[in-house]
Length: 383
Image (cartoon, rainbow, N blue to C red; front, top):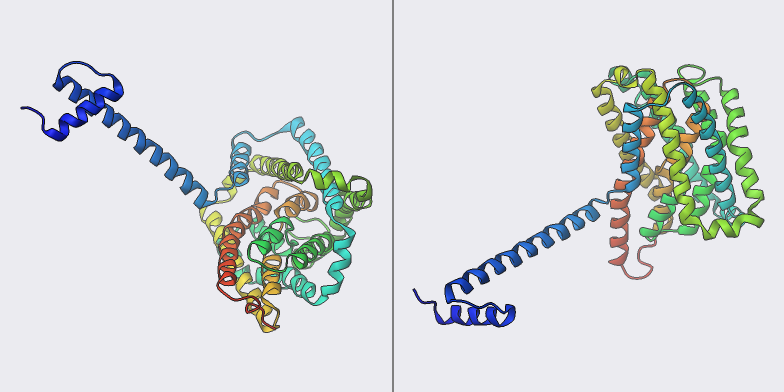
């Protein structure tokens, strides 16, 4: 059967472009194979592009994957014996270096400016160190039903932690909130947490469970965390410029220290039988508790900010600074405050809460930003 007019034109074009020779049928088959190969390449490129868009849309954080890999590594290859003692010493030095750099980052101008907006800061501190512990006590019935004692201590420890600095500022900026107030409030919360967190844990759990005497815990925190922090802050006139220029590199230092503490903590817990003592229902229960705690906190803080008639920009700063909890401060602080094989279970709630707050706050910040862009200048302010 002879090819039609369009087919003859296509075959002639294929010959001219690719230099094919031979009879018409052979040329037609070659053209068909080339078209099919081209189509397959287009499909492959489309699938790869779609996969990249999906990963970007899911906001998969490399640090989250690193945390999961660290927990898996500690579960299958925990450090033991002399190596564990060496890792503990290395971890203590890394924690001291971490808080030294945190002190060097905090500018005195931010501390002075923070004192001017005292009403907003009092609300954020009240949400962080009063509202959260009260919410944590509401989970006590769940502790008897589904949580192990170590996991419930971890939930209370999560509630007693200060706010995180970097992500609070980032989400406040993304939502078009009061960024200077967020900087001051988050920094103040992080600094006061050195004192408030052990005091709160002493009031919530006392000397029971995995925590030693509160006075001993406070002494350890002052020595291992506050002293390096103050040393870094007083060294800021000499090293502050270097710290500001290398913020991106220092972020990896923060994350590396957290991963090191998580590995040593979970190694000790695995050696003590963490996964044998923690059944799957308890893990699901602590995940549900972290999600419920985040939802209750964000709804309550939003309600408080609106009832006190803060502006929209201040409300955003209050919501994000008041609802977030610091993994970067919490994990090293747990290493100082708690001892024994239960440390892995105690830091598990803050690890889960950290991932949930990143996901939820990203969605909430995007909604705040969209609502602001849809309003005229100044209409978003409520007094």
